[in-house]
Image (cartoon, rainbow, N blue to C red):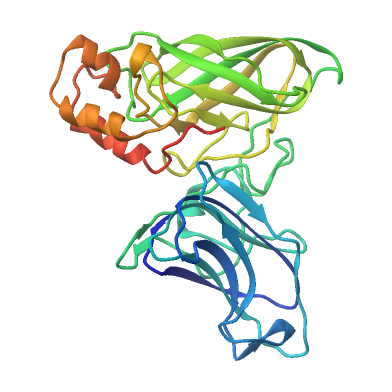
Length: 366
């Protein structure tokens, strides 16, 4: 969710019996002023565990300014005592002048059950949010900011071969012999923001693809791959990497000619809304030969326009928004090559809306 703040607090009530709990969050803090950006567990009873008084902090995660999402997890919090006060608040705080983008916030008990539920999470089809917690965050505003939820679909079930009840999981085929290596071809499908069918300009796109994680000590060099589009607006291409060890733990980076770089950790990821999917550790298994990776159910956000010599700078900034705004209505081929995001052969308000929506992410994912 996004919170723009003048002492903004967003609270969710939790009922926590005595026990051990893990608090974690993933936040991009664009600006940090005053007390900055924090995720805090607060006592919401006259007294709480550990003799804590009402409104006192039990534990807090602080997030400094960053150019990318930062993930933090506390050491297990132990709630103990002799009373029966079990009422707490999970509080998101954005102090005066600060700005933060919340990817997810999580509170799990010792058995790993998720106790936080956002109303926006209910539509996900991969992950393990499954809780009887009655309260939901939902969408809303608080006079100074607008909230919207998202969730890393890689959270929870990290093994795609282990089913989650009520969830359709991708099935990964048997891996090759551990320790062996060879050429791995990635047969990729991707979806681009604003393109829902075969566009008027269906010229193949030059897309950069690289690998990280797994058996690699560092990420590979980019492969420049030609992607073609089908009638449903899905783009397909193949990238081949040599000397790739068979096994799991890989992640793929995809960078389109006008798109932000997307880091993908799952072989068939999904998301509840455009741009909601984010991940940390690789969960892709590769073998020698062809590996089918379907990224078409997440969206690559557009707006990192080519600048001098056709190079992108890895961020959506004033150059990108200004170029589109100043060229609204243009059908000039040289300008379309830069600012026509949905490939309909005109730079118009649809392109401007696309780049504004992508500002919620803004940076290449690394």
